Image (tube, rainbow, N blue to C red):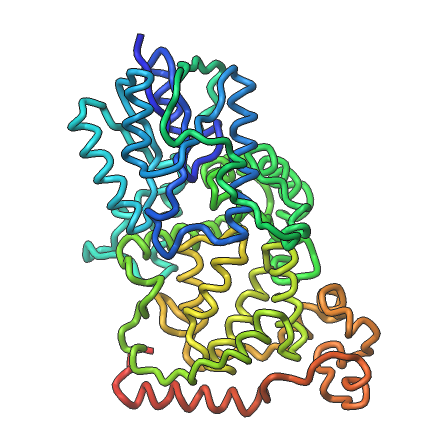
Length: 471
């Protein structure tokens, strides 16, 4: 009788799980385990919102395993020692895992794999989160892509080849008897916040079932209108699958298979391609979460760090309605519409000229879909320092953007109730009527949009003149 360990990480599902599928096919029994070792992720250990999601996702995975007669072994501590202890306790022959591609975790997994193979365990790893391995997709010069469109053109030719694996019909589990060092209950991981901040997260349903239900809803209600509806934050025009993808409760292969043949599929697949591009960049350029992708940007003159401005931005008190609506939505729900993410990032990095890392860190702590690759790509794209970045002169005007994508102010009125009675253009620019603004209790704008735009443009022009000609 042979036993395999299946190490769950950011693949918290049973369907289309290559490691689980292979382990069940090749061994008599398995032990499913999760090791909580946030210290191994350094400064990019999951933030508060992500920890909330992880707690509920682990509970959902454990419930799914119990349907098959087993359970999830949860351990806390050093990953290598936890795996060694579990392997010894059940006399396992092999370890099966799905790959992670973040820089620290790549190194950790390589170290763990070498050590366990030296112990006599077979170690087998699989790709469960991407259409293509990051190292497999290169341009004609054999170098990593730095621009999205040719990257997507190449990737798009490959994705139809992939079909999702079914959930195993039966899973036989081995028992891990006796005392196991580091074994804890999910609740003992203390992932949930110790205050009621996350009460607004109740609309989310973490776990594999929640991901499938959301995918079905998107296919029925929004996919057909995705191309024209995705930019309107008051509508349910996007899939909202990002946190489920982040924790591996569903895979892009599953999404593609479920939506194939639906009207509106291609624009949505392209957005999933951006997710893949972000992972590709992080794999080839591992310093991008902390350093400018474009080194010419290192000479950019950021404004001095402004704690007061940062606080107003984080709390949704900038006096710019569409920005404040987004920041309040983020705090209340752990999520923000993508169009609005660009607007709040543009205000912070361009009108306020605060370093993009400050925004990246806040998103990391407050987004339930906080993903290291996507977060770095998005912030650097808006700031102008990243791969395939927005042109330096693209500084979003939040008033014209909200007039275009929230014309009636429905999104603003929902999240900024001080403006619920604003008429016409005032919901987008309440400062244009000082008497209304004073009576509303809403703050005046943190910055003059026109003046701050010109100041930012001057800073970008100076950078170009100093040799940053690739901006």
